[in-house]
Image (spheres, rainbow, N blue to C red):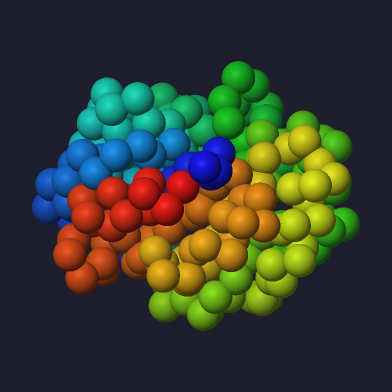
Length: 204
């Protein structure tokens, strides 16, 4: 039995109304800790529209709604938190925008960046990519040993991200990941998103 939980990440492009049905079926599959709306190269209004459609459903299911990259919009739209990368807003900017929200930080494969984020007060750090991913071109490949080191030495929760599927997840769970951030591994699962979420929870 592991304490690991599922952290869903949206596909990079969605039609919000159509995707809401897909997301609903995923949430019906079992425990999900959080859902990150991660839309790249779209207008602020498209992010607003997607959030307005999806956020009530996610929060209504007791799942945290996290926005990628944009603390300003996360605060404006009533999101539960924001996830920032190293090229996005700084942790300090994110925390200022969401004083009581969840702030997570991408740390790639860097112990140094993760320790800085943890000391600053980040609610979680994210390492990756652990496996090849189609969702985006990963800047770094992270080693499972890094995950194990963090889980044993630090109190700040750690998220594993990058190409994670039901099949390749067990070593990450065993290494001590608190959350698995999964996109294609759920949305493109052969039996559908609901079955994927059920399978991940069976694994945990």
